[in-house]
Image (tube, rainbow, N blue to C red; front, side, top):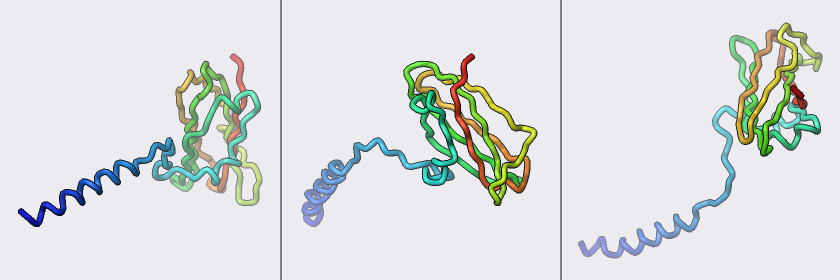
Length: 139
């Protein structure tokens, strides 16, 4: 028992040190599988009316059955409802746009602080990259 007494102050000191080192940062690392911001920030283009209303929380990209897929998680940071539309375009290795029967704008409405995922799959196996346009939409 005498040997354990010198350990008590050491354990107490370690506990205090650990508590003092707790981070108060709001930084949350991306979840596994999410792309780093540097990989997607130039692929998502916002028009001026929605630029300050929506933020990107996470972007995922994968190949499934030989086709490129993308999912963009958005959050409305505006204090009121935001209406917007998205268009995802696919490109081959040479930078040429690939036509798709799924081409077209998709309309979305998000309430304040609501989040949603926008996703799409390429229909052409030659797709190696994508671009998403986000624009205001009036009902």
